[in-house]
Amino acid sequence: MMKHRKFQILGGVLLFLFAGFTLASFKDTLTPYVSYQQAKELNRTVQVAGGLEEGSYNYDDQRESLNFTLAEAETGQTLRVRYHGVKPGNFEDAVSIVAIGRYNSTDDVLDAEKLLVKCPSKYQGAEAEQGPNKYETKSYG
Image (cartoon, rainbow, N blue to C red; front, side, top):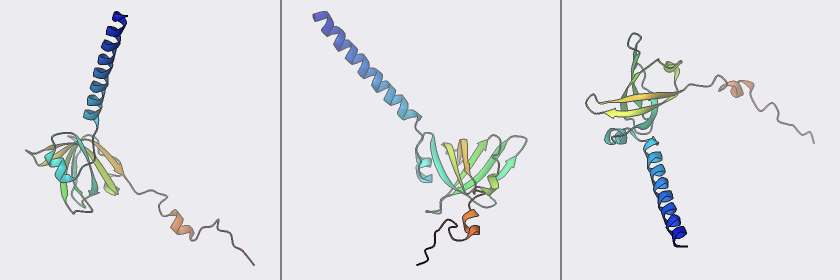
C-alpha cells in the first residue's frame, strides 16, 4: 500500500512538471499582434499589421531582399520592414500586410521572417455592380 502511494505521488509530480514544461514551451511559440512601439520594445518575435506606405518599397531581385514601410491607420505611425525572400505576388496591391519578425534596434527595422499579404478580392465590387439584391422578393398587394 505504501509503494502505491509513492508511485501516485511521483506520477502526480511528473505530470505536473510535464504540464508546466508544455505550457512554457507553448507560450514561447506564440507571436502576438503588437503595436509598432511595442515591437520596438519587446525582444521577441511579434506580428505587426498595417498598410503599405505608397512608394516606400524596393525589391532587390539578386539578393531577394524586400524593404518597405508599414503604416498604422489608427495612429499614423510607420515602421520600416526588411524581408529576405521572394516578394509576395500582388505585393503592390496589398490592402494590408502582416509582418512576423523581430525588431533590430541597430538598423531601426523589423526583420521579418514571414509576410502575410491581403489583396483586394476580385469579387469585392461584384455586389455593387449588380445593384440591389437580385434575390429580393417583391410583394404585390
